[in-house]
Every structure is written in structure tokens, then in C-alpha cells.
Length: 314
Image (cartoon, rainbow, N blue to C red; front, side):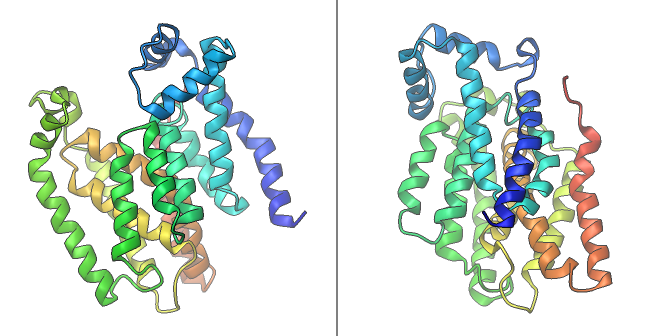
């Protein structure tokens, strides 16, 4: 067994049980738990095919919903272990995973599973032909992954992740990407109504409020660090597809800042990508010089500033 695998195994044994505890928080305080339980016990089958398939398997073994819920969390933990197989990336990821434990991972569990699966597929298959087929399969667990699929397909077809962000192809593609998002942001209400999400498109909807100033500052600051990283002269950065994906997610969230349900959801997806960005920044900038290490520490501080809002249920 190589050292990296051994370190990862030790970290999983230490920290994944802690993560399970927080994800599996008091069901009475979980806003979505009751709806999932009713759907399971009354066989409503109102969710996507992938999730419904998991429910059908669980019912065939006559598992109570509480056991099925634990199985879903274990699936998330398996995807987390696969995604953060590098022990150093896992260490950087744990604060974000804790931050997301009772939101994305513990409440929005369908979207959590779908997003983690998309990222695992992205990590292992982004440069392979099977990427498209596997990615479409992941969309069976939550329809909101369609945006993620658009971003990852755009990255694969329109960007050269081995080149700097100022590389002519990348620069032009990013300008096109921003222009496309700005156009969609003007049409977002019409798109939501067309898709049947009338309650999101209403003027007084709580989902259509502007993101807070602090979240906009956080996203903008992190994006600056990513652009600096992607403009390094010393060849492609480590985990460059993930770093470019992080940039696309942040730009998306910033463009749709007036629509919290859209911007916030994909800012959360960025938080799962952020550990790769931090690790890459350290390898390309932080370890190169004293000043680079100082910038890395500043980046770490900004990235983890969200933990000031952490309010976990024990």
C-alpha cells in the first residue's frame, strides 16, 4: 500500500464518521426529511428516475425509511472518498464538507448525491469519450445537474485546460460564456415559467432575492485568485480541469447574483470544487516562495471565511 493511500484511509476512518454524524442530524429539524419520508412510504415516485430506482431497491429489501436514509448518506460518503482520494485535498475539503453537511449533503440529499456523482465522473472521465454517457446518467438523480453538465461540456469542448486563461482560444471562449450567461440572466423568469417553476418566478418569491454583499465579496475574491493561478507562466496547473470548472461556476454564480436559488445552488457546487483549487494554488504558487505562501494563506483565510456562518445542529 502506498503512503498516499494509507494516509487517505486513516483520514477516512477519522473524519467520515464525524461527517456522517452531522449529515444525519435530527430529522425533526430537517426541512426536507418529511417530504422524502412520505414519498418513500406512500410510493409517490415524484422524483427523478435515478433516485426512484434507489427507493425501489430499498423497498424490495423491505428497509424502513430511516435505514434507506442512512444508505443515501453512505452513498454520499463513498462519492466523497472517491472525489477526494488525495489526502491533502481531503484535508482542505473537510471544512467545506462540514459547512455543507446539513444543507446540500443532509437536506438537499438528491442534489448532493447527483452533484458528487457528477464531480466524480468529471474527475475520472473528463478526458475520455465515455464522459458524456456517464454524465447524462448522473443527471437521472436531479434535474438541476443539467447546468453542471452544460458547464462541463462547455469546458471540454471550448477550453484548453492545459493553457493559460489568456490563451486566445480560452479568452474568446470565456467572453462567449459570459455573454451567453448575461443573455440567459435576462430571460431567466421566462425559462423558469416554461419549465413549470412558477413559484420561483413570482416577484415576491423568497428564492429570487439578491445574494448578500458578503457572498459576492467572497466569490469575487476567490475568482481573482483563480484567474491569477490560471495565468501562471509555468505550464498547466495541477487539477487544471477542476480549477477551470471552479472559475466557470463562480462566474455563473456572480452573473445570476439576483436569483439566490440559482446563484446559491451553484456556489455550493463550487465549494465542493474549491479544495482542488486551493491545493493547485499551493502547488503552483504557495510552495514556490515566501510571498507565494503568504498569498496562499490569504486565499485559505478567504475560502474559509464562510465558516463564520457555521451553525451546526448537534
